Image (cartoon, rainbow, N blue to C red):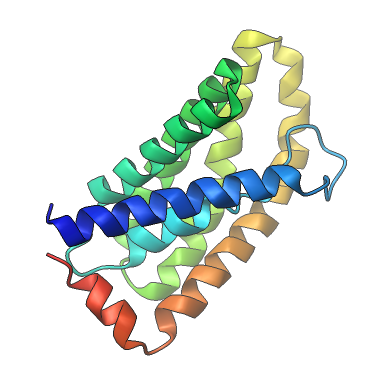
Length: 174
């Protein structure tokens, strides 16, 4: 990874962390315990579908950096476990979707599938910590995940489809 690409990856990780923190300050939109919009996944999904010299492992590094930094900022080890489980499931879903749909419109199935799988990962983590009764939340979380995954994907798609010299330069960072 070149210096430019490393710096831009760090910038995306910090952007993701900032969105994570800001989202934590927003009052709950829906009365479902554990529900979040998922704004922190915007830079992650963006980096995966950026194309050019950006690869899935670059996206994985951005996600891992955000998860570790958010655990350090929050000081909550339980949050680290939830984030790791949700992040691993979410990234896997994104990467698999990206293998089959590399075009810009592929952000929609990737965003939705990753949001759904993020909830599955977090519910599995919660079932180990609390009890199996947390699975009762899963249907409600999954409906919300489809909506929020579509929202995040639409934001990424809008930026990727906009003809922009800056995006072209980012794609070709060596």
